Image (cartoon, rainbow, N blue to C red; front, side, top):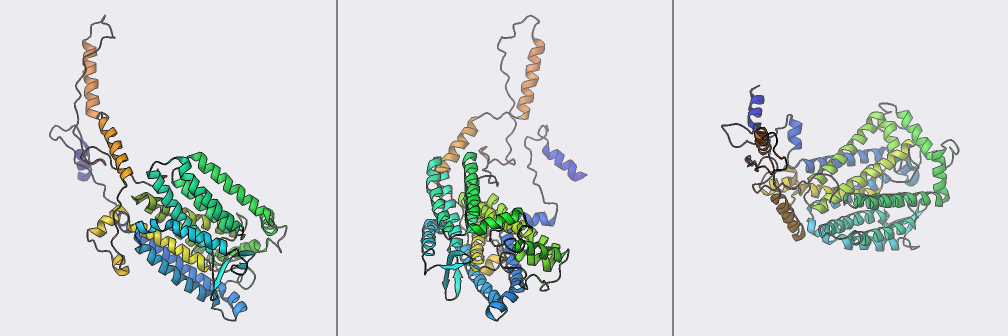
Length: 509
């Protein structure tokens, strides 16, 4: 009761004995709330979620690929060994991305995208690119296959975020922002379509739409781009015979249950066999050549069969935590480049999760997109870990995290990984001038307060009561002198009265 009375007393502004109101700081009610408010929470969350996803992915790849590996190579460890090797490559890329300065990342963005365009051209040349699953989109070096379209998505995301953030700060016109970005995306999409690879085309389209949305471009541009991507996907889905067969089997599952609809049908059977708690890890039967690509595109069905509804729902909750962490980093970032990059990367990963789970459960037609960090796929796992490393780097560059680390506050994870101190974000000259002009406009406006409005109303009422009955109402009254309330600094303004810039998670711009 005494705490409530103290808060009410502090909030009073008309107290005769005091001229200023002390700011009331909201204290977290629980330990979990206090932990969420710590400077390094985003960094710890993204690392923990990535570690759990990688561990679960390796476990399920080992469980789902044993029969396929034995039939193909005579050893039940073939697919799992390759997945472990690519995971180590991805962890190395993850560590390099965490240590890389943001300025270097932005400086190398365009060069990296240009290199991936060259790789997309080379993979289409017979004798250089290898055909797998009907798509010429693989390089095979020393027995290891690499998919350049996965690298192209990362490079396009980095370059697109750098381009839009820079030109947005420079107040570039809409044409200047779209002309370099959209033609480059069209070139990359055309090269991926030529392989052909519908799944990677859809994934790159999600990245393009995410960049346009979070950059705050006009709604008509986003809607027109969304319509173009959906129309292109529909045309590509019906252009090839096997794709149109998949679409028709999705629309009518019982029409060709032993042909184009076989995979989707067997995946639903595996999910149904799992029930609530599953058959047990390693005890599933769908991987015994009943479900093709059980370790890759349809690994979610194996998870549902062996771990049941509880395991599948737990995995989806883990991806939900990943989405929350990514958007939290984007909301708390001061750098527009990192804000745009992390938000779009989160949308891209969650878009792939939605598409993969959607076609496994029968909500979408089969497209061949893998489940990030879970499915067996070397290049996909390595590039996704690279992107997660960039997000962890962005988490270390949150303003509160930078202030805490540079102030000497100890963090065990940073000390264990021997990470360098992050650099604070320095606004560009254009942004500084714009903020200064915006501040001057705000300071030039009068700020009526509750006390001044009350004083004006009281004096106006007094003058009205003293007026004679026949006095002309158009007569200009004597202006009342407003009683200015004392200015407080606990409401988000600095001492000059300027409101601090909000770095919330809405669309950038």
